[in-house]
Image: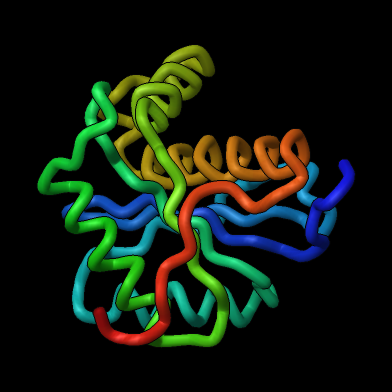
Length: 155
């Protein structure tokens, strides 16, 4: 665990209709679901409220690349949302590859006995948990923050 920065983090799974939010404990042992935020004009403000409530030291936003590691329209959308978060607060924001997190989240929910239909309201939170847990594990293994920092000034 050399080089792990102590402090709570929020994991953010950006979707067209909803934003899943998860959080970690101060020692980065476990990511847990927090909330599914409607993707509307208040989404950034609500994520910032959650960041303040949990005293987040960092926001980890999922970067949805395709399986070949290339950008898609969803990639551009996530980058834009991450940029809005970075400009809205002094809390550092990082983009982390999230390939297959939603697929993994659906699998976990299905294995727990939930149908895809009944999971719709929480799958975004579950994807945020998978993303954040991955980011925590990478930082602990490599001793440095995962992903890419998002500049806080307009591009």
